[in-house]
Image: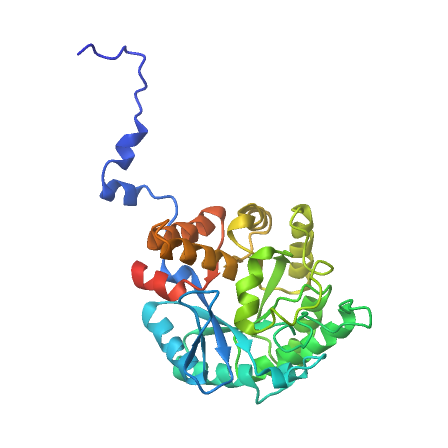
Length: 332
């Protein structure tokens, strides 16, 4: 066979891909259970588990099952769990007052999980949409507009209830202006100086949230849309302004939501601010992978892990995901 001319490239990049051992040695990013935050939906009924039809493999858990999940998270090396409530519709009203009930679902679940596995961090959503009859993240006026300052006042009380119950992290997802500073001031004033704030700093008005709204029971209740307070998907510079404001107001960590469609935002935020930056692989992302896998169109396990690794490659410190338990089992 005629040899290649001397000008043929001396470096053959495929040499670094020829075997598993060298691929592992040269990997630029790695994914471990320590990168995962387990997203759980809890409910206030007696049934141990209630399947969410739009999210195959995801169940709403009662209090006892949530406590058991905390124990599994500890065993799997998952550092934290983020909990989201599905409450009896009879407990909802226009003002979301059930969110302030110290004996309500979320405080009860926090206590049960911390008793079961105190080493696992508990992250609590701070927003009113699971508790309101109109499905919005805050209080609304007669025209349906979400009121910023009035909502922030309620969010302060909600976060204090969660902190009192033992939440390690409060995570406001409402996108009201100024709420991080208000929450930080209130937490400090009440002695919760070590309670972390994970801000949903760059949360977009996305179509990927549909299955989640079914999971928490707000899908049919939502009046209108959330475009007046969640970010425009067309914007990137705006995300940096939002993150900068939240850091200045006292956020310990920030989040980009959704995940895969916004990897560019994850990269910009992590590089610009060098603050712990998390991505939320939301319900629509989860549901698409599961649906395609169930139809045999993709290798579900492979795509799950590849999608999670993409967040790390983009610069995320970690990922909030409904896949956390399954992924940790595969990575363990």
